[in-house]
Length: 288
Image (cartoon, rainbow, N blue to C red):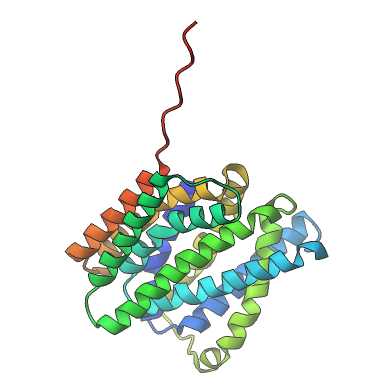
């Protein structure tokens, strides 16, 4: 499930970047995409479970999750608007580090000196990717900051939703949260929606269908089912595959260049993730 998730995410960077470059406004794209995914999840949940009801006691946590998901989508779509899919994908490689930090802050895990060393290495990689993104420096730095914001907000969402996974299915939570986020997305994107022309070619709409069914509907189910089984920190470690897959896909499909600093930064991010995921060997049993 985790391998399928990161592979779909990797393709989504390039597919969404292509759709935006073809003239789909960022907020119009996000609100229509989320509305379609929410309708799919609502239909599935009502068909299988017969209800979308959630308890009032979970309302504060659900508001936090909704705010994080809303901020994540804004960060993601505008990061792709301001910089390349390759850069955004590499910076999303910090997701496991942020997830572990937030999981530790919420009391789910204890972090070692090795982890903090890995975190510093990963953040050094973020700086190198930002410096190596090239082009118009101010615009790209804005995109870099939004990409990091996207990683932080998704990490927060993954940690915050974990307690809710013990009570509700991934389908019900996805139906509720995607539906809830669609409303503010449509409100802030109302002007873009009003001015948006939907006269796109077939390839854009094929990409849009993939962006809804694959990286949004399918991955929501896979990712949060996996989190329920192995925990957010262990699940997020698989995200180290996603930025490198996405960078390769963007290079092959969009011919986006990768600078030397970005390569070094990506390796530093990956090195930090690998270091964080290593565990000390288990002690040997005493001799009989």
